[in-house]
Length: 167
Image 1 (cartoon, one colour):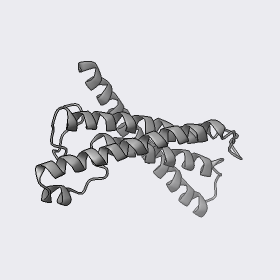
Image 2: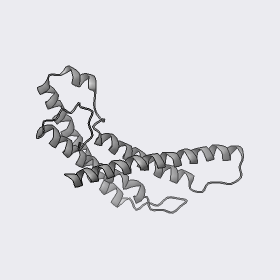
Image 3: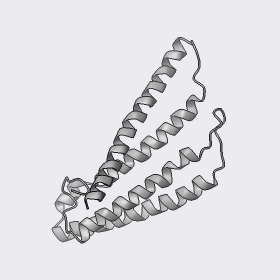
Image 4: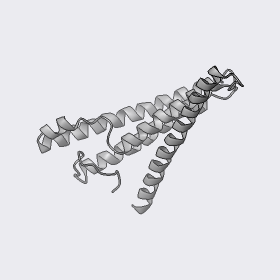
């Protein structure tokens, strides 16, 4: 269990730090773009392609982070109005649906990334690096969905608690 907790912390830290770095790079690129429109000293080659790459990975990694913390697809006011058995059934149903969605995202994302064969127009990079975010994120989301289901069904933990995943 100690190994799993370390792996979970590593994945969580990686997702959060990477999102912050990519968001800072995105703001830097966008800020430079605005400044360079006013003072055209040089051009940024492949600007749109870099922004697209950063954006898709930010979205996927931030979603994995929210998924891990159980903060996606939650309406606390509805959970609070339900009796314990209904709250349990709702949590199981939601997590099963989330697992199904994550598995579809992984499977079809993999097919999409593997079949892309596309390159970016300016930088001539393989778009698989862009599309790989989809199955990678889906895979992590599926794992976290299974962990949440395990915690809800077998450990009987209340899904509405504000807790970390493997605490």
